[in-house]
Length: 237
Length: 333
Image (cartoon, rainbow over all chains, first blue to last red):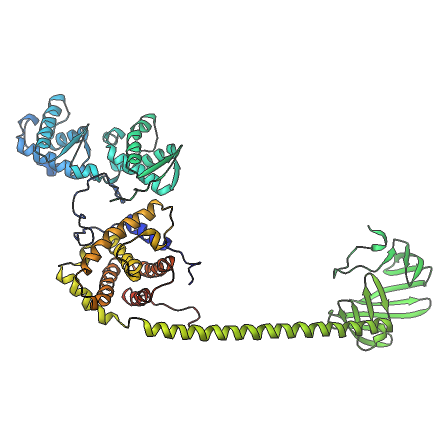
């Protein structure tokens, strides 16, 4: 094969992309990448689309009390940690629903909500979780969110307002990644459709503005007029 | 319609015979001017011609016609293909062949025809002209054949010379190549990794791949840093290019660290040994077709930076074994 008809690095780049899209799990080695096991320092994309994983409320151990306010703090903290571990970044409303379902309480009232948020604040002060606006997660969950399909959730929970900005960044990134070159509106539509929201509403457009700006600022995506393409730092780890 | 059919082509693409033939009037160089009328009565054709008199004709069989013309019986038949056409008449059967300039009758040359530039000639004159044409055509054919023969002989000679030169070059390359096999280097690579407590099975396929690229593309050229431009990557890197560059640079730095303490005399075996270990670990994590594609793509990438070095040749050969890819060279069965 001569240099003229060789594919250069095209073949290697193609294989590398396929490996990126299909990451192997359970990797513990740091010999080739010393920072492989450290938490990401910045927002990093993940690639596998998975169904939204809901916490098993019966495993939260909040049953048996006559009133939610009678639950002791330790049990409540453990339950909050567990919900955040499974569903983070999770909206405070969704967290509340999980906890009252686990406790067998019918309505998420303002006093219950206030109590939950007080424990969330305490856990944040302890450095166990983080709050960003209405969303609660471990730090690494904000930095490397999972691409989740929200179709599996009931309507009460499947609200675009319950999806964190970091997750919206991810679905927007994937929309651009899949298309290569795509206009902003179509990218937003595809992004939401991918995670189970079939209609791009004005609210959806509004919510996606900040994630889009964040992607552009990080160099993950670049914008030329109304067109979006992957940026030079698209796959930075 | 053109005047006297000038510019009109027959079914072989030649100028039609120059003549006028209308519904009732025909005028030609040899036949002069004649008037003609034709009708069909009870399956019989009746033709009246001012030059040839009255003619009564009918079809006897396919391609066979019988007629009475001015009291004279006519029998005509024409069968076969252009190459050998059989012509039937009262006097017997003759055989003729079509040529690019008319037809030549082998039994009765006087019944040949010759046409050039729309001027048709028949009879012995046509036979002579056909013979002249055949001699000229044979001459041209012989010259063309000789030229073709000579060209093929020259091509064969050139191919032979190229083959000999390639064999000599290959023999020289084989002499200069590092004569190391997987068996020679595998333990060296394992030793380096073991000394650092590294188990490549714990590394991701993405990083193993990047490190493998570094070994072949960079170390194979005696370089210890991956520079995209030097390696032959395009200047306008895409996001996907950039991702590969960053991974190769990151993993390459680690590979260089592993080799840094290796004594000079063992550096070749150490490089090949590490490359083998990386490739073996990679092959454990991906499917066979990915291994084959990786090997071919590494080969392409080597060429992007210029002709392959002897070390890169040896690496590609060794990787075919490690990745269990069966290479069949072009022309081999």
